[in-house]
Length: 458
Image 1: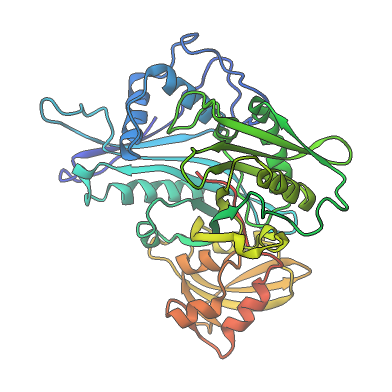
Image 2: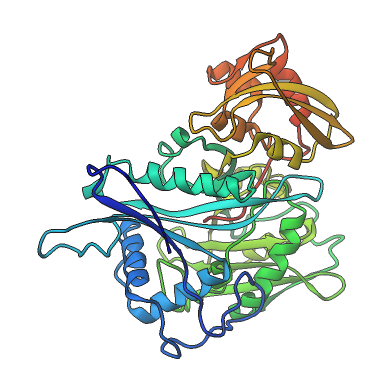
């Protein structure tokens, strides 16, 4: 455990960080394979401080109190991700209140990779489980934790941090910007549902499977998909439990309503799956997709053809569809595809501007000079980026140098994966052109053949 000292007597809190405790028989960092931790009670389990940290997180996300065996289940999975837990602890509490060993603010991190194009997977520092108890807000608790954590991540050589935001107004002041988006969709099914081309040219098949097979299949298929998907973020171990219905943080026990179908390619091997559940008979009867992975276009459309064929169902919903969704254009009746909302799915934070720019793949050659402002002091400066053959080289310039664009760290994060054009942010007033045509040159250099899409929530 590490403690961040504070010299001020006016700050009646202690900031602590500690790893998820090592479980007997665990396998840190490994996501493949079935459960390999000992049953609850087979070891000492989590200590009291860790249990109270978990209960504080559950309070923040409006999830009910859980028992020690459930906490063990959560932590066994999080230990595989190498998760680090942070907490802000009050030095005292009144009689009858939660005691001071329950943190009044929580925060957690683990590290995965971000697909930045061209087969490159850039190490990324992922942030999750951020809560501040309503009774202790506006005390600077999140700022102290996030500032200390980001400084530590940069010292460790991390070029970029990432999170998914429950509230969109919190993280901009810490230099995070929305970098990728997804759609929440509804699809009309039933007698009128049809895809162009019917089954012509399809060489694979879809079969029903026991959801338990996804415990092993999800990690293997996701790793394959992640390697080739621009904007994809590595998944935490808990995803295989969500996909299989084994448990989620909101529902800690087996969900027997979850079903699964697997697509097998022409070689007879799995190359896609969908897990889903029927949500009830109220009109229209709806199937909700929990997770859908497809390593080929054929597998993707075949799984949707299966979903559209389920009897007694009039609608299929999915909350994480890509912005560029081939399903919309494969439908014989495109009006049967409805977009309920478009939401940010990934926020990025540049920690080391040269390392981030040089770590990314580029599809065009060119040069651009950027003036980056960073109030937290991690990524600021003036940098010239020169790209040849898909590889970038950066040069730090004198602060008085001319820049094509002037922007904040948050705006650079939003532009990093070309999820929004620089010209749009210039029009919005959040990015300034230092030279005529600077935004157009930036957009040409950072352009990608596809929009970024992250299938990971964390």
